[in-house]
Amino acid sequence: MSKSPAYLVLGDESWPVESLLKALAEETHVDAFVEGRGWLGARRDAKKIPPKATTGASQISRALESFECDARGADETVAIVGFRDSDTSASVVATLKSRFADMRILQLGARVAGPRQSLRRDVRWTELLGEGVDEELELLALQKRARELQKSVEGAERIAILLQDDPDPDGLASALAFRKILGRKPQTAPLVSFGSITRPENVAMARLLEIEVEHIHSPADLEAFDRVVLVDCQPSFFKGKTLPVDVILDHHPKASVPMLRKPDFVEIREDLGATSTLMTLYLRALGIEISQRLATALLYGIKTDTLLLNREVSEQDLAAFVHLYPRSNGNILRRIERPELPLAYLEVFRKALGRLKVRDGLALMVLGKVEREEWIPQTADFGLQVEGAELAVAVGIYDDKVVLSGRAFGPNIHCGELFKSLFNGGLGCAGGHRSMAKAIVGKERWETKFGARSLRSMPLLQASVFRILGQGLKAQGLKTTALGSVKASKA
Ligand SMILES: [Mn+2]
Image (cartoon, rainbow, N blue to C red):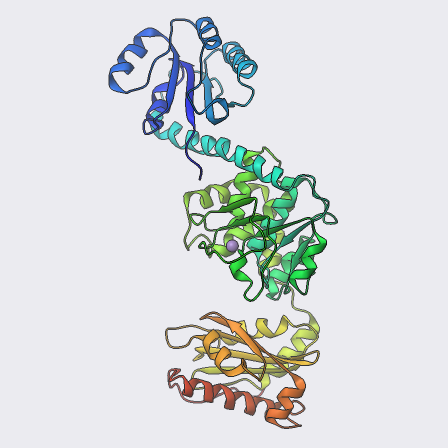
């Protein structure tokens, strides 16, 4: 976040100015005009808030005529206006606007004191007002930043919104939000990726929320765009590629790598659990209405990136979640989280289940030919639920390639390292993390290595995958817990 602004507080005793000034006590630049001399007198001794006036609201407007902002100027000043009388508030706001066009103004609503009831609760103002004001002040500060963001791509004819290679819900949702902030259509601001969406939930999200991601092949494809915006990722995510980047919106740890040009706008909020949270803040700061579709996407983005608010979650993530929840569509969310299973997949899955074997903690599911690539990781996910499995691998043939999807849990196995050691450098290509990995081998290469019939006979395919994975685990000194062989009964 940029440095904090100067504050100018204008109000009267009916409004809990004290709480507000308490909230601002840490700030160094605070001016206050407060109606009601008695209160101000007491205040003056307690805090170093320079009083500028005054005994009447009309005097405040008059005093403002000669008020000068400190050295940082009006555009670095936030005015907070709150009078019991809404006409007074309006006239003070009008004076501020006419004198300081760039000043950000937060106008608080009048609070009416009701008659004393016999049933009552006592709540301290600081508790009630502190948080609400903090949030509003943050939104006000972000409004300026959000306008800079809009400006940074202004006038561009075509904008590429670049997502990571396997776009995830946070990236997809943030991209939608960014497009909304620009008021653009998919034609002039398409979502692009060097990869494609693979996880079944993410595929379902894209389908149900009508999100399209264009596949691009190389950085040269980005030259067709006037501006390139990285959402939920950074240039360091694209190993071996040097990209033209104009804007970065992200929450992953900062990593700098060479770029073709210096970006105009960079916001990397490592304190947030999701980029969707940042985008929700921007939308709110700009006063842009969040549609049900967008709210559903953003909510799901936050939910998945914070593992249902369990991981690295900040107050802002929670606030965004609370803001989005009533605006979202629960039915669509449920359908995303439990994607429909096509009958064609169930047929392939049924056969794979019949061939399921667990050996030394490794559950292997051989799918054979698949119509859709995402069936392979979907099956691997299932494999990890099998009793005794620490590492689950699903293998299938898609187009002209053999695709392996791995899932692991527990401290013993690093799935990504295992796959990389086995498949990179000649045989194919692989990548992944500790718990999740993927490898691709061309069909011809596979047959050269494992024999001409190895892809036509499922038992042979199963045997060859068991062999190569066994070798890999051994070579790395990795071990799955010796649980012994468990052979699934024939389906
Ligand atoms: Mn994210």
